[in-house]
Picture 1 (cartoon, rainbow, N blue to C red):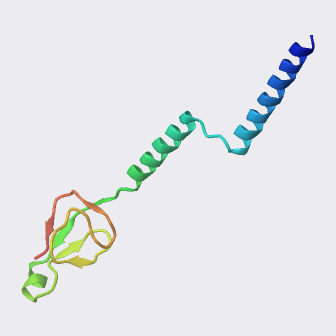
Picture 2 (picture 1 turned 30 degrees about the horizontal axis):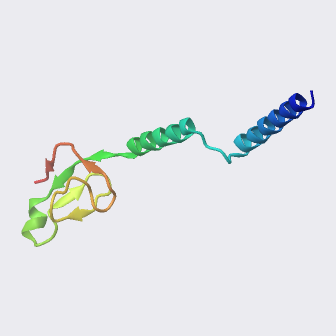
Picture 3 (picture 1 turned 90 degrees about the vertical axis):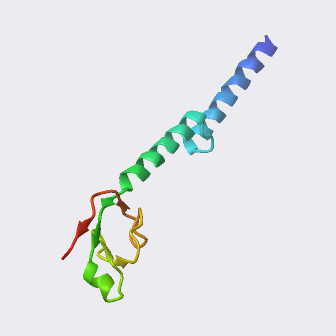
Length: 98
């Protein structure tokens, strides 16, 4: 009898301890870690903005940069796949200004 009551009491204490750890954020289960990773990935995907380069032949003839970002309106010499100034993904059709 004494052995079974000690075992029950020990199980209660362990259960209470684990509950306290989980609610205080000490223990992160694998499911919680995976959920956080997925949320981070979706947040990063939502942040991607899309834009296009505006080509200015007259700028390039004057020795200046020839391409302008459609979002931040800053110029570059080469049409990169991403704007080096604001990070916008350049996957839309380029426009030519005359």
